Image 1 (cartoon, rainbow, N blue to C red):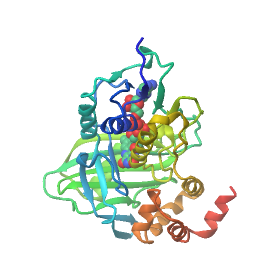
Image 2: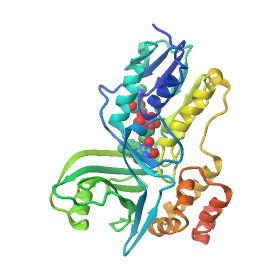
Image 3: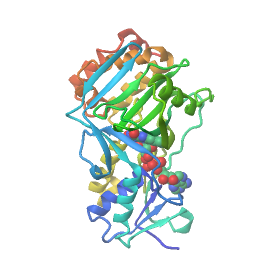
Image 4: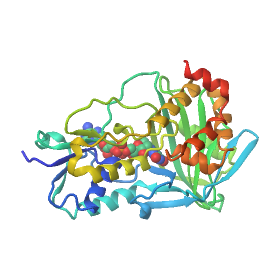
Length: 355
Ligand SMILES: Cc1cc2nc3c(=O)[nH]c(=O)nc-3n(C[C@H](O)[C@H](O)[C@H](O)COP(=O)(O)OP(=O)(O)OC[C@H]3O[C@@H](n4cnc5c(N)ncnc54)[C@H](O)[C@@H]3O)c2cc1C
């Protein structure tokens, strides 16, 4: 059976981002790489959005970017600017196509459906398939989004809606998220932050239909695409193994309060590329511990007081949006962290420290 210098398990966002980063920096000229990916074909299956706080390789896959956004709670709307860090939406279909076209040029890179097809004994492995502890008490961000097209112009495509909490909460945290790509095309997503021990929030299609037709008061539209997903708001199990590094969601690249992962994956890929010659001895790359700690407290509050969360998010963004964006994107300094912490309800958070 064939052997490879490197193996990437999972050719999704993290696996392909890493392969691309290594390839464009010519790290695979004299090295071989096997990518293990069971899917039959690559097609658009996700939309990755984030505030662009650092450069990345995929500006040409950006479907749309915005410099304004809003947050709603019942009776109140906050309009905010993000011109320092525009919010970008990446079309996964364009991303897969761009990377696969590039990787095809190098004969040292080969795709397999199953790791059993190769000899992995002497390879360095980058694994993006997470092992998640099955615990019904864990929190998830679970969601369903549809892209719709309207007959007439309907949306203001200069501003996206990050969170609209003016909807049923069902004793959890629930909001709608709207990305208007043009005046007559938008992604509308219903998002829950909750445990997954029952399916009472899973009537996604009805939620979206009601929101579009009753809340937005839009009747003439057609659905052109649908995506559904769940992001764990806890870290996957991690067993340290020689010659193996976890990447992507499996590698703890998700920011637990927000689910944002895409840019962290890009930064991790760069880190691996810079250290690839001595990767077995490289320090573990992780989201800064201060964010891990603060996110844990935040999620404890969310679990205990879901009814307070819409207000907390709303107030958080009353600090300068630039500061909040930096905080949520792991780029804030100590003083910026403090300004956000001071916006939180003091006693609720102090009590959460001791739960
Ligand atoms: C629908 C959706 C929307 C998201 N939107 C955003 C967003 O807007 N912004 C953001 O920052 N994050 C977002 N995320 C979170 C995160 O960015 C994505 O989940 C991202 O795809 C994670 O990359 P990954 O490589 O870890 O996992 P994936 O992209 O899921 O890749 C894992 C790959 O492993 C393959 N695989 C599965 N089992 C095996 C196996 N046994 N052996 C080998 N391969 C296997 C899968 O087919 C897949 O291709 C979203 C997540 C989802 C699910």
